[in-house]
Image (cartoon, rainbow, N blue to C red; front, side, top):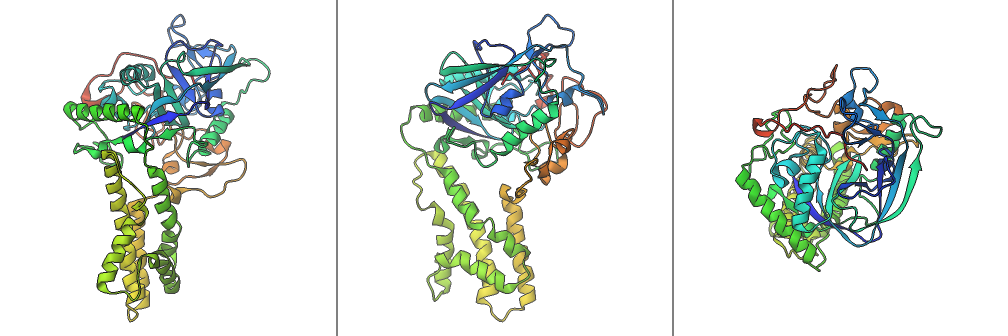
Length: 481
């Protein structure tokens, strides 16, 4: 639902897996992680019934084969050439202007992961989820108009749809990979995928090494606009959708994106680091709130509440002073910010609302355990725990889902398209490669509901937005990374 103009700085290394040494002439995919691209550095496969058609990379990376296999059976690959693959290494030879599409935007699902691209950016409500090459063509037509180089999306790890490999990239090397029938080939696809997942998991808290610089001051979000974001699936109200928005509303948002991209590309100003502001707020409260919500000790609660709030209070406190203290609490981490764009002001308002909610809950807790010394302690503890638990349920910070330190042969595994079960989305845990294999029932593949394991490949094409029929393409799994 949100988009961020961004820059990949000069010198950053990017990776591309394919079946040939040749540099692509037009659009193709790049990966930020080596293991991501390695999964595509193999021979090539072709569409079923089309052995003379356009070649595709293959075999499909793990998880993609879920679309091609039956219950308990091996993947039913299309005709596959077991020839060699190649890993290309590129370097940005100038700053690359891109647009980051937030969320699991490389997930080819019917769950809304593609709404921002298909409905908002391309205005194509009839494109089937798996037709990603056509989607990339639509996006690159916009990129040419907006004078940017491509788009960053997320699946397991981050990828770039790069629109012209002949402009802005320097080829460092092409390293041959053995064919699938040669010694040295990695035949266990699940182990290859596990290494891909491990590489992705290392980036949960950021892509690292300033490889992407986001212009937060130029971000655009559907939440900025008075449009219908209701999910038509009543079981998933927490997942916003764009299927209820009108084409006129999407035109307005798209024009706003175009203006923000143009301003970001031409501006020499340093954007506000809203991620840094957010991190300061989160790190202040993330460990203390769960402690307050879990302890039965009023002394611990009192100590934690005072530790969090005393910085804002000028003793001895009066009613008037406490009102001022709550306001100082709300504004504390926003004080260094100089909002200069309309988008800055929207983000400021969102953060201010969040910090105000946190501070209101903590001052309510303080009133019970600090100010009112005659209150029943057991009742006060229960009330404060409920206040903070309700606050945490509203915040739902991702850090509270982290697994902690996993064993060397494990990763903290969360559902990341096309891998993961329902439980992995709601309760990530440490898993090794044998645990990850076969886990994919969270994702709503075309023609299939989450949590259901199909006994046969899902039907194609799916029903698309507004009931329109989807295009008669079959360019699924045709990206090379």
